[in-house]
Length: 298
Image (tube, rainbow, N blue to C red; front, side):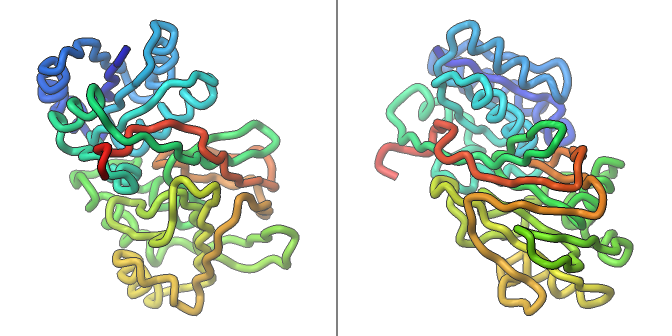
């Protein structure tokens, strides 16, 4: 049984505009169970309802936030269902790790209902005293959170330009934070990104060598970079050339323990959360999610 879930609020209304095309594409291949979430944040309930109704494949129309919430709900349920991702959001970054034509609804409908390549992908987990959050594509601390706060305040831009514009405005306003990782001495940082996938923010190749199925997360730490020096670093991140910067460190690990001066706010797939403790563990859940990854010969 195939169920399609659409978040009309994703991509600042792109999800709503996509709905007629989604219905037509899936209706043409005999799938008529297209469900619309009443508002953002209700996708988890929609996933659980679909599973209760017997869904074996759930196709999600939205962006990274919608995809991440739905993937987390499916993994937390323990159900052995499969997920497919159709672009309807701002960055749509996670789909760039797969071979599926996420922007082509007709092609995706044929793929979901016909032969396709399946992949088991990892999810990331951020755990603290108050519980845990799962993320599909990326999590971030520091500058990334400040940018997200600015994005959530709204504006007229849409698509990948949203993140780029917000990041440019925060370049000189954000002051950084103190970080300890795995018991090491404290150091000043501008930003830490923990990436499961290659891209984030719609345009930034934050972890150019990342793989979503290797059981590891890419930890990208940008040190105490200030003032005008941040501008060329941001430009380098657009093309994935930031890793050679002397203030950037990158490594790959299955888990890491982070300590902050105060319980930190963090970004998971474009959603803001706040830890309840200064100590946070970040880890990979290997092969946690089955996904439609592309044509069978891809």
